[in-house]
Amino acid sequence: MHVTLEYIAIGIMLVLFLSVSFNVIYSVVAQLEHVREEQLYTAAERLMDKILLTTGTPPDWGSNVFVTTEDISDFGLALQGTRTPYEIDPNKVMRLANLSTLPNPLLINSTLIAELLGIKGEYGFKLEMRPLLKHHVTLLETYDLPGEGNPSLPAKLRVRLTNWYGMGVPSANVTGIYVLVRVWGPGGQQSEVKYWVWAESNVTDALGTCILDFRDELEGFFSKGDQQGGQHWLWAFVILHTNWYGFVSVDGYSMPPEPEAPVEGYIIGDAIFINRTVEGLSGAVITRDEILQAIPEYESLITVTEVEWCRQQPNDPEWCKEAGNVLPSSRDYLVGHVKYIEKLSSHVFILGKWRGRPLVVVISRIPEISIAYGSRESTPANAVTLLRLAQLYRYPYLVRLTLWRWSEGWP
Image (spheres, rainbow, N blue to C red):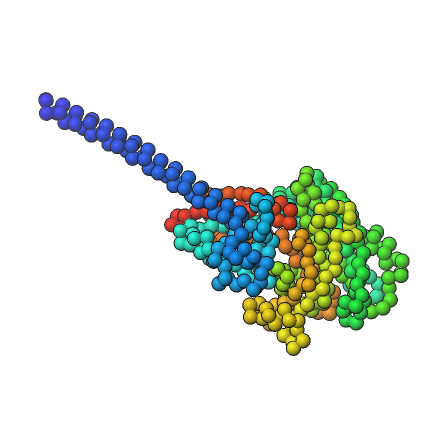
């Protein structure tokens, strides 16, 4: 009888000991997991600050096209010389962009970024950057010029404004600034250039859409009849300026002559890269965003600048010969050198021809960026995501960084 009671007592004590042990172990593991999560969050904050608050080495690695990937020893996007926190360099951002229609010739890829940040093989990350407000433009009607071979011009547009999550933004003031450029001279060369500017404004509805109609301006302009004559070419594009309760966004739109026409490109520093099938002319139009932000000074918000193209000819500009060792071959890109560009020029409109028809290549210097080191398709459950509001050309620019431990993620 006494032996049985002893066994029962020992069993009860063993159960109590195991229960206490499990509770202690669970408490310790939970604390360790909490510490690991805090360490991951701290690491993400440290990386975010390094990316947005430091310039990298050399500090001009974005604007200096002669700086190759081998020359970069540290990574950071901050604008050199700025005293404003979270003001980032557009040229550095442009070196991260990679358009689906035209690969970036000076791309800084995610593997190199991870190596420069010192996290290669230790952490995986996804870095996303985009404007606070995004414009989606649909062409509704065109204005057809009389005569065979004359181009059709965009006349009526539907603009949908969305936020980071793709939701429509209502009650935003959208201004469309229509620019018509006429170039006189044989073959459209820049012997004489003149441009006209009109503006239409509207407010987005509950779904974030509005209509911009320029038909009256175009009909009134061409009905005068005094702009005809001489050998000339016409280019048209629209600059979109939106104000939503103090948050401002700007974008550019041009109508391609055909759906597959290459209407995108890059400008990094003073170098331009566009599709080699485009016949680039010697002229480009740049926005003057200091004036654009002070609407309604529409007439002076743009300026025409000269572009020198590298065509691998003996008479190529000296810049092309100096850059020949680091810039991509003209067999892949049409490379040009813009002689003058405003410090605050968010968009550049390249006047060119494609298959014998006028073409405007719109280069946005406020691109959307999405790069990943590790998995791009999905994110591990144990990951930290940070969101920061930065400035690009004084426009709000969202930066989102997702970080996870390499051992807990992919590949």
